[in-house]
Figure 1 (spheres, helix red, strand yellow):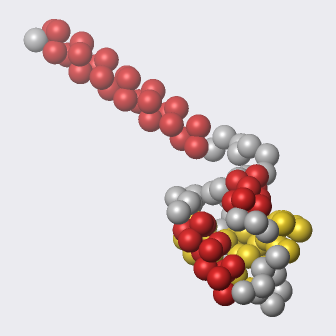
Figure 2: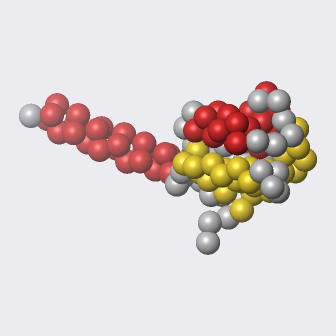
Length: 113
């Protein structure tokens, strides 16, 4: 009986410690180039046709953090919309675009309103 009480007390203490540690990790600062945003706008050179847009759409939708992508051929603008509580590093976005054969001119993060 005493042993069960000791195990129960130990379990409660362990659970309390774990629950206290997890939120601290989730509030830690993000690495450089990553922030809690919901949209990343990237100015891209080389986008000329609908095939370009479809290609980038397929590439970005394979990324876990990406909810939707919009490619504006006229402005050369790729808007990546992120899932809630998800993010993707700037470096990764640039890599995906350059690996697809386009060059990144600028990248700008927009906060959710």
